[in-house]
Image (cartoon, rainbow over all chains, first blue to last red; front, side, top):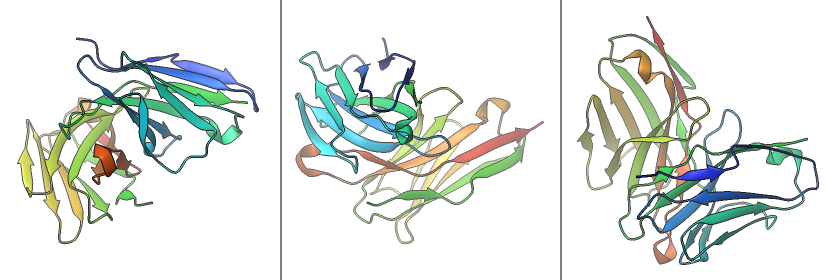
Amino acid sequence: DAGVTQSPTHLIKTRGQQVTLRCSPKSGHDTVSWYQQALGQGPQFIFQYYEEEERQRGNFPDRFSGHQFPNYSSELNVNALLLGDSALYLCASSLAGTGYGYTFGSGTRLTVV
Amino acid sequence: GESVGLHLPTLSVQEGDNSIINCAYSNSASDYFIWYKQESGKGPQFIIDIRSNMDKRQGQRVTVLLNKTVKHLSLQIAATQPGDSAVYFCADRAPGGGGADGLTFGKGTHLIIQP
């Protein structure tokens, strides 16, 4: 049973560019959440997708957007990259209504230069 | 927004000793709490969770204690092993509209096991 898979594992981008990160949830899960983890910090909630809609958002600017597909997989898009966007981006999946059982992927390490 | 914080950035213990990692949370509406372990280069790994209607829960070698009066959470690891070396995060969830349930994480405690 595959867990949460994220791609790519590492990425280097230039300031001002745009990036798309991908996530496939754990089998049986239908909800995807994205987190940003700066070096030495705890993960920070970006947003959560359920039924192909964003249903909760953390304190992140509109440059951060996402999408969820009918197969529950998800993308995180970041526009106009800043140096401060360099971080580990984590995807977590869960099953709606259960209230527990978050499973995290290993993340995508984004470096903005 | 609300934040969940840990008291110590680093905790060093002898192999075989018990470890206690503490966490304070601020959102009185939080109803669910989780401890995660994160090893270098990996995503957070679930250790144990507890709901707000409980004050103690035990797993294999781990125990979580919840004190809602002072908004305090702790993780106890019995007979610490080298493989327990990692950064430990507590996280809480406050119910959101429409069933949304994003987690709020603390900054983490780095547990170092001395031989």
